[in-house]
Structures are given as C-alpha cells and as structure tokens.
Image (tube, rainbow, N blue to C red; front, side, top):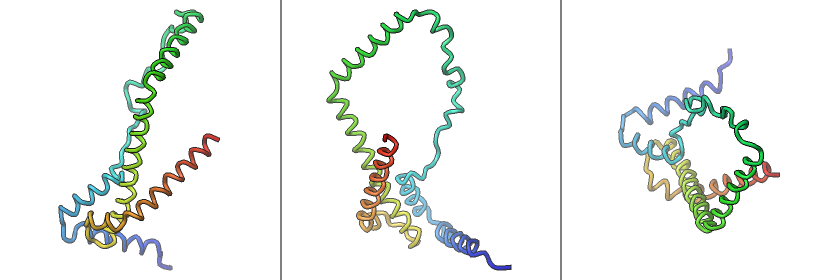
Length: 162
C-alpha cells in the first residue's frame, strides 16, 4: 500500500506544533500568541440567535391588526416617518461623523488584524514569538493584504447591490 502524502504532512505539522507549544512549556509564549490571536479574531465564538428565549413569541402581536383602522395606522406611519426625517435632518452632521468614526475604527482594527496574521505565521514558522520585531517586518505585507481584503469586499458589495 502506498504512503499517504497528506498524512505525512499532517504528522509533521503536529510534531512541529507540539515542539513549539510544549517543549519546553513557556507561558509567555502562550500569552503572546493569545494576544496575537485576539487581534486576528481567532477567539472564535458567535451568538446563536435561535437559542434566545425572547425569540419564542417574536411576531405574535395578537389582535393588533383588528384594533386599529387603516386610517389610524396610516396616520401613525406618516407621523413616525416625519419625526424620523426631522431627527435625521437635524442631526445629519453627527450621524455622518458617527458613521465615519465607525468605518475608521473598523479599518484600523482590520489593518491590525492583517498585520498580525503575518506576525502569527512568522512566529509559528520561526518558533520564536517576538511581536514588535515581526510587526515592523510585516507592516507592508499587512497593508497589501488590507487593501486586497477591502477591495474584494467593496467589489462583493457592489456585485450584490447590482
């Protein structure tokens, strides 16, 4: 029977990982890797919306449609829309600034994440975790990855919109 090339590569990767993480055990290396993975987004997790107990009766409004006439509902909708449009018109500058601030913070964390992806790979390959030195070495690579990721997201959103 022939050897499985993929299994040999996996065994080699597992051996290298064990050597890096456990031989000898170094808590500072683990903390540095945890910080890198935190910024990369390797914390994982997510929220399961189906397990929320508040969602059990969502959409059950009882006799809402029967207790109000169409004219009252239409007047309520028009009044709400006019109040929202007045609010938006009054605070448009603050809304735009808030959206721009959110985009700026998102872009900053995205750039940091892209740089730290290269830092993580270099740390694993060299079996030595040095955050500052590897960040200095990979600022350009992170910027190129950042530009590529944001360009692909913009193209993807434009494709969805069209």
